[in-house]
Length: 353
Image 1: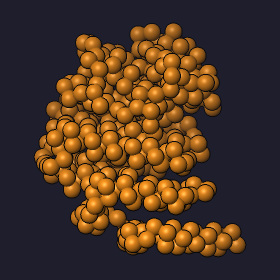
Image 2: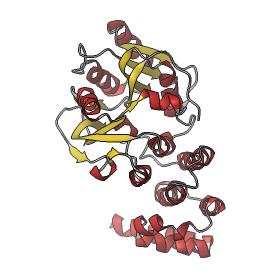
Image 3: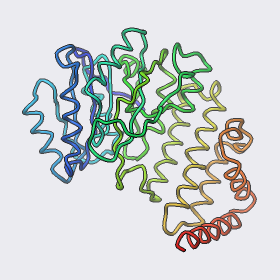
């Protein structure tokens, strides 16, 4: 991954919003309204960079209308072809003029003082990376729903080797943070393009370059849960994208000189993304799973890390049932596949009664 050269930083903050087909149900409007209504308006110069990723609905028209209404805040970049969220974020990074960079999904929104509180924490502590928690909601509201802690106190402060390891292992969501732009530029950080799950690669990798992480212990970001969420609709294509993200994470860490120092962490994160999460989400979520794909997952993991199941993090964090099933597959792909499919059939039969 290699970031663009960018332009001079004459803004305090650049908020990058990748947009694809979010016109329905007022989702995009609600997101943009939360951004133009930030309490930092009048305190700091900031910009909202909206990248329309070749939407086929009225998303671009909505964005252009907001750009006309808020020309001092909103800048719209229309992509001619769909690059997925990673590519859209990269286009935003190329145009960004802010000292700080923030990202937001275009169907989510933030509290009015979200960026004020994160920037204040950065100024108070000297941090170059600041995050917060988030609230799960299923409708447009500023009332707090189910609170999810995105990072832990053990990951914060000056980032020692041990804290870098913790942050690499569990970086949390990238949209719940602001990043000092100079760190992104100096280290040529960006996102994989043309795939889902781009954060699975970028999140751990980016975390290794920051030196001081702080968090505001409040749910200032609202994550909108809905049935057509990219993350929750499982297809083989999306499973393969997660595999690509894992391979890109490995390649980037190797090429940037992290593989020796963080080998155990990289091995586990690769195994988790490429194999464990993908295997069980594929078998549970795809209507007609294929034995050949399940076999490919095991073989691909063993190609990179033959002894992945001896990794201390694998033994610590992978559930005993998952370890048992993966051990079964290592002995026989066919035996595992038949056993899991029969077990799933019995579960579904019991659930239907």
